[in-house]
Length: 135
Image (spheres, one colour):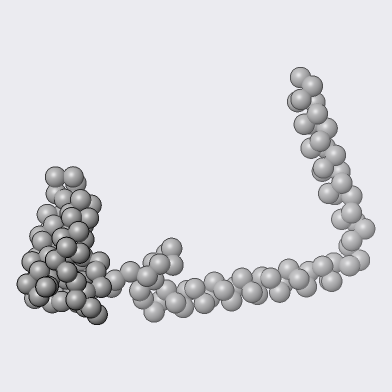
């Protein structure tokens, strides 16, 4: 019971001390509003910049970039590297790296674990394509 009373007194005191200076600050309200208006303009400018970036494409609501577009009709080296998340386009990837990446992707996207059969097919196709050119 004492804690409830203490909390009530604390809330009342906080409200009293917050409301007390407001009438004293009314003559200075123009000076107090200037920082708020500047902050408002800065936030609006930031929101406009974010909206502009998103409208150009390639950025999701969280601000992270994503790959825009679907799969190619014919598998190429770039697409296979994107699917397996490897950087084998710039430098040669070994079969060990390709197998490791393939295993990681299949663990995430296997149809028996709720993944898409189409994506599993594309992952397997990317692995086969990259293993042909790997050393």
